[in-house]
Amino acid sequence: MSPTLRGALLSLAAFGIYATHDVVVKTLGHHYSSFQIIFFSGLLSFPFVTVLLMSDKRDVNLVPRHPWLSLLRSVLAVVTGGMGFYAFSVLPMAQCYAMLFATPLLITLLSIPFLGEKVGVRRALAVIVGLIGVLIVLRPGSVPFSWGHLSGLGAALSGALASVIVRKIGKNERSIVLMMYPMLMSVGVMALTMPFVYRPMPFEHLALTGVISVFGMCGAALVIAAYRAAPAVVVAPMQYSQIIWAALYGWLFFDETIDGWTAVGSAVIILSGIYIVLREGTPSVSQNRPVLENRSRLDTGTIPRISLWLRRFGPKEG
Image (cartoon, rainbow, N blue to C red; front, side):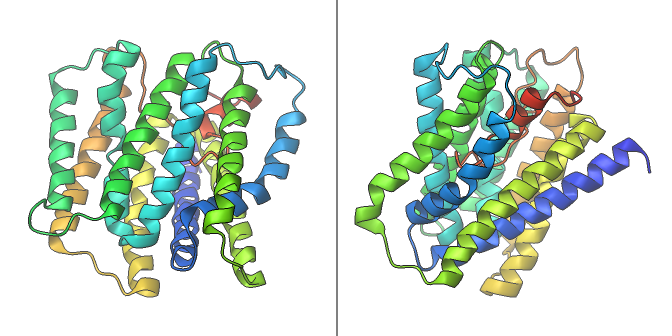
């Protein structure tokens, strides 16, 4: 099996696991607030992630070189996780994914003022077309606009901004700072909300928060293996396979169907995102490659970003 094919298959498996992770999030979201779900899943994953980080003796200084941007990025991780988990708990899975797939479009836009990225006519048109796809999914004026929709769009925006900040400060900020601060803030902030939102959890539900942590780590491990095997331009587009899982899982577990407008809008967003990824893969087009280097899914702050794992433990660059 060629390395490229192996990387593609590993990434498809990873995003299948991530989609299953989101099924568990949605299931628990019917009973508990997103804050409680994030708190327990983050708490259960924290010891394992900490052991992995501390096992690498390099670069262990926890004082940030960019304190304000590091703080902002940590806050954005908390906001993204809270809104993303809430969106999954109240919206059809396919519709939620469609909005989160707008993240690469927003990263491209934000990279202009923050990274000095020069976006040509082709990528600019791809962004515009992709945002039209978001409007097709939302159909403003024809369907009720809920807090779930607002949360999904907010998660895409805050996640994109967090990704751009990582690209801006990542070259000279310590990787352990970029990894640990969002995790600490996520668990800490969610702990503060517990007196107001906590509901007693039976053992099976508490175990499901552990499943979220395990699936998150397994998905991350497979994505890392995929990027080690194949170039980013091959691995990155595989994230859009989640829409297939969303359709299947939504139908199997939540009695959801994808309406025609959501399908059309999703296709427009996905094609725009893939085009942007392919354009960034051309060295003469993009110097910063902000979308290709955003190797993570939703930045919940409970599990370090894939790009930071890759950077810290020295895999092959995509």
